[in-house]
Length: 76
Image (cartoon, rainbow, N blue to C red; front, side, top):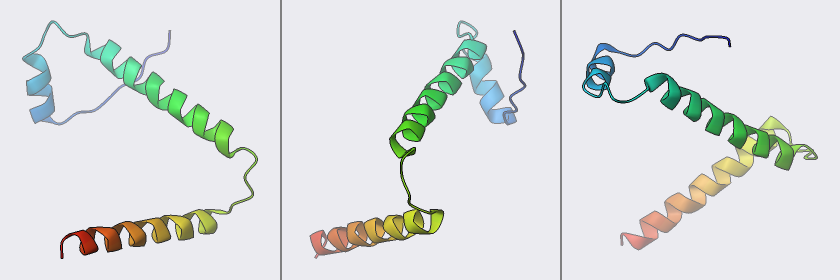
């Protein structure tokens, strides 16, 4: 089985060491697996899309603006 190296800062390493009962390699493997599965689903959902990166950025901007407006309206 191939190995990878994951770098963490000193604080995170200290906190991890407080839990020696945890198999951190397994936690990392599971997190990577879940992320890959999510990306696979996203790839499947978007495989027939004709949207460009610019189209996606425009849609995201509109969604963010709409959400910002709703938050501002709710705080008045």
